[in-house]
Amino acid sequence: MRNITVKVHPSKVNLKKKEQLAWKIAEISSDKAKLNKEAIEMVINRIIDNASVAIASYNRKPVVSARQMALAHPRKNGANVFGLNPKVKVDCEWAAWANGTAVRELDYHDTFLAADYSHPGDNIPAILAVAQQKGCNGMDLIRGILTGYEVQVNLVKGICLHEHKIDHIAHLGPSVAAGLGSLLRLNTDTIFQSVQQALHTTISTRQSRKGEISSWKAFAPAHAGKLAVEAVDRCMRGEGAPSPIYEGEDSVIAYVLSGPGKKYIVPLPRVNEPKKAILETYTKEHSAEYQSQALIDLARSLNKKIKNLNNIKKITIETSHHTHYVIGTGANDPQKMDPYASRETLDHSIMYIFAVALEDGAWHHVKSYTPQRARRKSTVQLWRKIVTKENKKWTKKYHNRDPKKKCFGGKVVVKMKNGSTISEEINVADAHPAGKRPFGRKEYINKFKILTDNIISKKESQRFLRCVQNLRKLKPKDLKGLNVEILPKMRKKNKKVKGIF
Image (cartoon, rainbow, N blue to C red):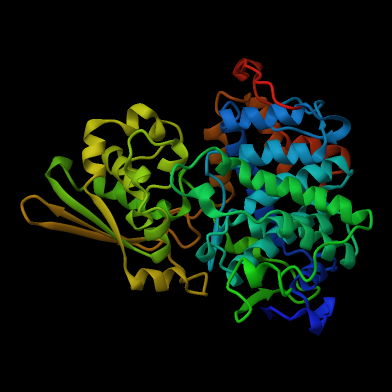
């Protein structure tokens, strides 16, 4: 690996493109690096994971809306839409839109947290859609996905967007563009322009994850993927982009991020070095914000130890700065304590999540979020007893550069009404690579079977799992097999709401 220093340069300096971050990203996207075997296996795991959560969200309103929009753009040799018969095809950018929304809706796929945070699996829908439309094979797809993960993970390590209230999809646009460059074997200059266009068009504020969180949280990464597809299309036609997009006098670092005096250090592989960043990422066992994963596991454990929850006086969760200020009481969002809040808001409230997991000793991607569950009197009472606070020890663990030492948990102190206390802590979720029950192929397949049970046939489940595990050998005509078709009886007749399309 190499560390790239990124800073603002005045226009008069005329920074050479080969010294720009976007060019260095393009270089590794167009190189001929060998593919790491473990990384290939993880690509297969993440395609399974994405299919699991996409099918489970098939009938949810944002997913229905995105799918209806996509179906208004049919294309004979286009891409597939999750859940539908593979004969149904649409323009690839609209497949990226529909499928990206389906993958993100339940907040249940993979994550990577560092200086900023991300869901690298968001790269897959757009790259897969373009692969299907352009007649790519399984190895092409693997190469594209590995590049997408590599770029996003390393941008997240080096550049914090959150501190400037910029949504994390600003790292996703460039990573999808880079992944598409690898997929299609584009030249370095075309990828360079595509990365810059994709960044320029995907910068948005964090209000999408603040206060009353709406369905846009599901649409946001799908939108970034769609814009990246369009950016690559333009650049393949010879069009250019605002440049330098990161280092320019009036560009992203100068006026969106930390300003002209800031230096960022972005790690990247050397040209022709294998791309293995996907191995640093981790999926979710529970359908909730990643920083709640370990705390859900801790709550499940405490459920067995506290016989009467009514005897609890107060619960304090000591955790990292990020957890406290994003999903904890440090966010100062009254909506996070509101029993009538949206599902999207509740899955960003560790107070709600911890209360439900503590009461139930379990977590479910549907049952744990129903309005009836959120408004249960005992839950609301327990919920209101929970506060979070930053502990610098946990902030330091959160930002540890060693993946084996990086932690996303916290310490929970339960004060009982009789004056006694129960105190426990957890470093990482049970499903984390360093956790009690790390996810491997068996667990990914089990998650797929649980989430798709009674939604797809057993025959379809077996077919998909055979197909995806044979990814290396898939020919272009076989990529449609990575789509999963749901049972006809599960296709609810959703009322089609008229829009423009």
